[in-house]
Length: 379
Image (cartoon, rainbow, N blue to C red; front, side, top):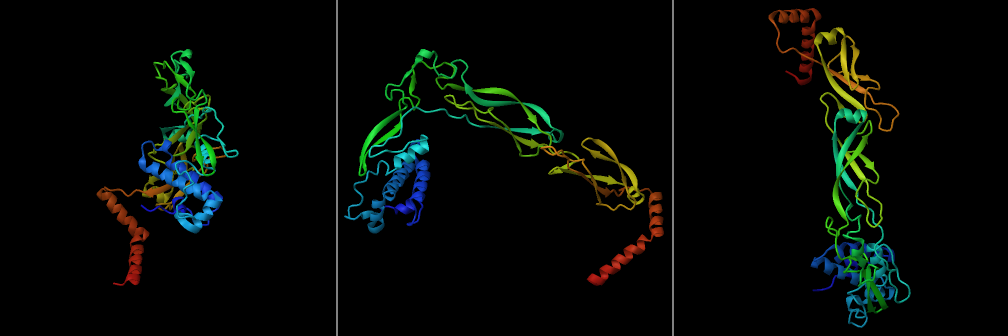
């Protein structure tokens, strides 16, 4: 099978800069690294292909030869001096930067500074909390139960039944790393990797804790009080620093993110900090004007509907909406009135309505409207 173009492998054009080559290599090497894809043969093959491309393109001399002669190289035998099973010039440093947090090379035999894994921050935790419309508007205090990883209380986070059961790893001698030398076309390099005996911990537990089985942490349920601020809305989150999962090796704990879901209200709809509701009134109230009761989140208010109010008219009540989340006032309440038409009328009511129509000339008004329709649509 023919080899793919090295620039194509890294997803670059032929004129790519050194920084672009390095950036592309880091991204792909991390994506296909065997430690992140255990047992995945396709990822392993892609990892080798990415390393091969980077080893050539990261070296100015080799790159110039590749650009001129292609995969065959200047002598027609390819780039035989390169060890494609390892990493190219600067490759070790890149990989260590990605997976171990530091490194670099010095001279021809550079290696990453050794030392076991340092402190690791605990994972963040998400909790979804459903609250009522009123709790979102006025604020509340809730007690929630969160499941998170914590240090095992029986062994104190050592993972051992007794402190004497923890000993230094004999393979890496406590460094958490082992090194292997490689000879390449650029000189002798030392490949430093995580010790497979202690998995980078630097210590081995001979007698594990019976509760956590040597894992040092266990999953526990904790009750946590959450203060819900007035004015919070759907899909907003409350952050509780340090209430996530416990850190490792002295690292800080993660955070707890409480995501809010607000139940709908029977009367009100919310848009930002404003509230909207619909109130039915009678024909008489709309025609003559009346004092009606308007529901608000704080109780009922009296409001005077002016005479001649039409259905669909909205009235604005200042500062009767939702309190602003960071203070500084409240939203407004918009009340929309609709005129209720009675479905059942007595004979006397029907007679009176007909008389009312005749007195007000509404029949003539409707005729005038239908005359206008004829003018527009014909007929």
